[in-house]
Image 1 (cartoon, rainbow, N blue to C red):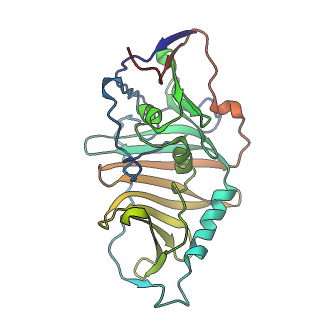
Image 2: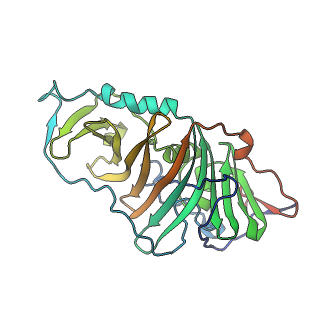
Image 3: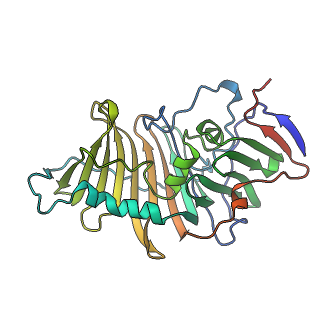
Length: 323
C-alpha cells in the first residue's frame, strides 16, 4: 500500500452496470446545503483541489439519453385552514405521528435503484447498489459493465472512496465537504442516510404549526415556522397520510428546496417511497432515486461501512492540505 497526499484530480465519468458486493441488489444517491438553508447543490470554494471524481450518487453522468419523469409539481389550489373544518382536518401531531413512527422503525436498508440527475446543462442516469444504517452509515456502489467502477462508504466518522481503475482510495473525515468531492452534494453523512431512507432531513416540532386542507389535491399541508422567518412545509396525502413533499421556504415565502416522495409500497409491513426526488429550486438541479427493489431492516455488518487497505492500491488523505 502506498500512501500519498491529496493530488489535483481531473473529473471523470462512469457508466452504470451490475452489482457485486450486494448479489441481486443495486443503489442510490444523495444531496446538498446552501449553508444549511437547504440549497443543497452548491459547492464550497475549494479551488483546484476540489476532487470531482465521477459524480457518484446523484451525479452519475452516464449520459445515456434517459427519460425523466415529470417531477412533483403542485399547483396553486384552494385551501381550508384548521379553524374552518376542525372536525375533518387532523392536527399536526396526528399528521407527523406516522412519519415519526416510520423514522423509528426504519433502521437499515439495502436495495437497487435507478438514479437520475439533471441541471441546466446535463442529465444522466445510472443504476447503483446502496446500503444504509441509521443514523449516518451508508455505502454506495457504482458499476460499469465489467465490475465496480467506484465505491463510497462511511461509518459516520470516516469516509472512503475507492476507484479500482485508478487503484486509488481516498480517505477523510465524513463531513459534507468530503462527501461533495464524490457525490457533488453538500450534505452530512446523516442527511445522506435520511435521504436514501426516504425521510426528510428533519421532522420539526409541532409548536405553532398550521394545518390546511388542499381541497383540489386532497392533501393536508402542514406549515411549521423556523427561526428567522423561514419555514418548513410538509404535504400529506389526505387518505393514507403518506408524506408527499417536504419544502424549505425562505422568509419571502419562496420555496428554496424540495423533496418529493411517491410510489409508496408496503415492504415487510412498512410503507416505503420508491421514488425520491430532491430539487434545488435556486440552483436548477434535480436528483431522483427510483428504487427497483428494497429490503428494509436487513442485518448489515459494521465492516460494510468501512474499507480496509488493499495491497497495491495507493491511499490519499483528503484532510491533508495539498502541497
